[in-house]
Length: 313
Length: 313
Image (cartoon, chains in turn blue, green):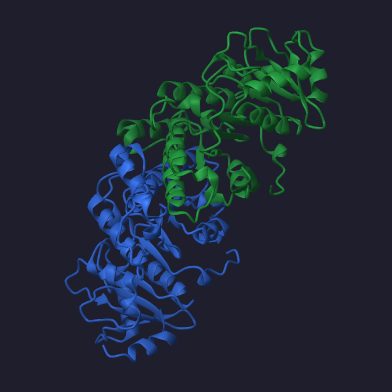
C-alpha cells in the first residue's frame, strides 16, 4: 500500500454490501428502496453537528428530471445554509447482482488476461460494476452528498493473490481534501460471501441454531475471539464452528479482513443496511456504549474493548 | 506531467469531439448512429494487420440484451481467432450535450470548490460526463474493443489555469500494457469550441468565404503556418484572419494545443467523425500521401512535412 496516513483524514469508511443495495437474484437490478434509505441515513450521519437539514440535490441529469434541476439551482440562494462538511467519509460498495454474472461466466477471478474470454469478461464486468457505481453516486448526490465515483483499476490498483498489492490513493485523498465523498467499488468477484443479514453468525444464518456474534475482539497477533455473547462453548470452538460452516471461506475471510482493519484501531461494524441498526452504527453512539437492542457485529482491537466494556451496558 | 514515455506504447490517440457523438442541442442525448459508425471505424483501424474480422461483443449488460450474452460467450469457442492486438490506442472524448448544462449553470469552470453551488455543479457535471463515458465504453465494447473507462479526476489529475498541471498516467499505461483501450473523458467545460465540421477553417465555417486549412506546419518554436492550400494571402494574414474570427478563442487554443502535440513528432488530424475522411485518417494511409479528395486538417511538425511533401501528391 502507498504510504498515506488515512487516520488523519477519514472519519468513517462505509462498505455497502452488494446484497443490500441490489436485488440479489435479478441480473443488474438495484434495490431502489434500500438504496434510498441508505443514502438518506448516510446524509444524516454526515451532517451530524450541522444545523442544516435541507437537502440540495446534486444529480442534475436528464433522468433525474429537468424540474429537479431548476429546483436545485434555486435552493442555492442562501448558500450559507449549505456549508456542511461532508468530508472525511469514504463509501465502498459491493457488486451484488452487477458484475457477478460476467465475472463467473468468464472466469475473470482466475486471472489470465491474455486469454480472450477472460479479457472480454474483465471489460464486461467493469461495465456492469461501473453502471452500479454511477447509480449509487446519483442516489447519494440526490441526497445532497457530494459524491465522486472512483474505479479501483482506473487509479492504478492491482491485485495479487486476491489482495491489493499496490494502491495509489492520491486521488481518493485529494477528493476528500476537496470536500468530496469518494465512492469506490470493490472487486466484483470476491464480494459474494455475506448475504443481507444482521451481522456475522457462528453458522449459516438459515440454521435455526445460528447465533449472532455481537462483539469480536482482535488480538495484536491478528487472532480474534468472540466476547459477546459469552457462548457456552469456548471461543476456540466458536472459531471451529464458523470454519466448519463456512464452505466458501467467505465468512472467515471477511472476519480476517475486518480484524486487519480493527488492529489499526478502527472499529468495524457489520450491520444490515437500511435499518435502525445501521443508522445507529453510523451515528457513532456505539463507540461509547453498545445497547442490548442493537443488532449487528462489532469487530474491535482488544486493547480498546476493555475501555468500552467499562461503561455500563 | 509525470514522466511517462508515451511514444513507446501509444500507436494512436483518438479524440472524439463532443459534437460528433452527441446531439448538440438536446440535453444528454447520444448520437447513436454516429457513435456506432465511429466505434466500427475504430475497430477497423485497431485490427489492421490482423486476419480476424469477427466481432466479439464485450458488453454483457442487461441493457445489451441477454441473448447477446450467450452469443458472445459461444463465440469464444475458437479463442485463437480472437487474438487481436488492440493495444496502443487511447480514446479521449468530449462532453457535447453532457455536462455543459451542469457546468455552465454552476460556473464550475471558474473554480472555487468552496462555494456550495460550484461544488454541487462539479458533482452534477461529473455524473453527466461519466454517464456519457460509460455509453461510449459500451459502444466500443459491443464492437469487441476491450475498452476501460477512466475519469481524469479519479486518477489524480488536476488543472491549473485550464492546463493539466499534474497527471498520474500510471493507470492509463498499465491498462495499455494489459491490452486494454483506455477511454478518457476530457474537461466538460472547455470542450465546446469546434463544432462538427470537416476540419479547421480560416474563419467560421458558416462564412461562405471560409477556407478549409488542409495542412498546418509547426515550427520548433511552436509557431505554425498553413502549407496547404497555398492561400493568396501570406500565412501571417491567415493567422490574423483566424484570430479575428475566433471570438471565443477556442479555435486558436485548439490549433495551439495540436501544435504542442505535433512538436513531439506526433501527427494530429482534425477530421469530421464517422466519415470516410476519419476512417482514412485512422488507417494511417495519410502518413505517406495526402490525396486531394481527403478533407480534413493535418497538423505536423515542419521538420517532417518536407518528407511527406516529397512524395507525389
